[in-house]
Image 1 (tube, rainbow, N blue to C red):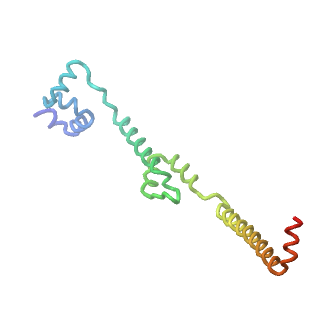
Image 2 (image 1 turned 90 degrees about the vertical axis):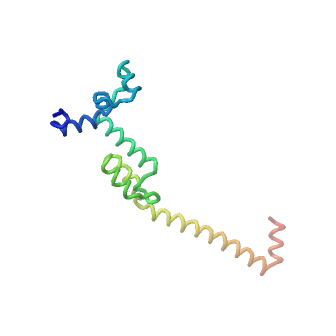
Image 3 (image 1 turned 120 degrees about the vertical axis):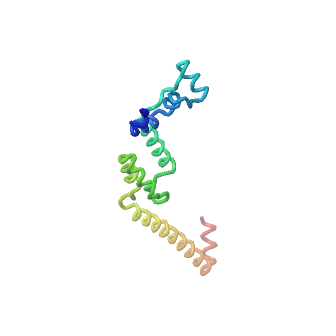
Length: 147
């Protein structure tokens, strides 16, 4: 019986952790891999933790580049949940940034009302001037000459 058949779980872990080493040991490595091993030029393999951290960072960057998943214009529940799992602090920051400010809507309504009132006052003044000119044409002509 071989070591692999007696230690199945350890064999699977090693095969997953370093497939290059396993292929070198069982004789299935490519010629270039064998040459690199003989010359001592094998690239260092990142640990499982380093690989997981790199994958997490890549996923967070991908979500972030797509926009704020909590914002009303780019809301994405899947991205929100993934971000909550991958980086809770960033998720909280983005959620807070996407919340409407207090009085944000009432300020916008007030600005729109103010603009409508100003426009109505201008139109009212212009209408009054046209009426006065139509009712009193001699007085309007005299005012234009004086002014």
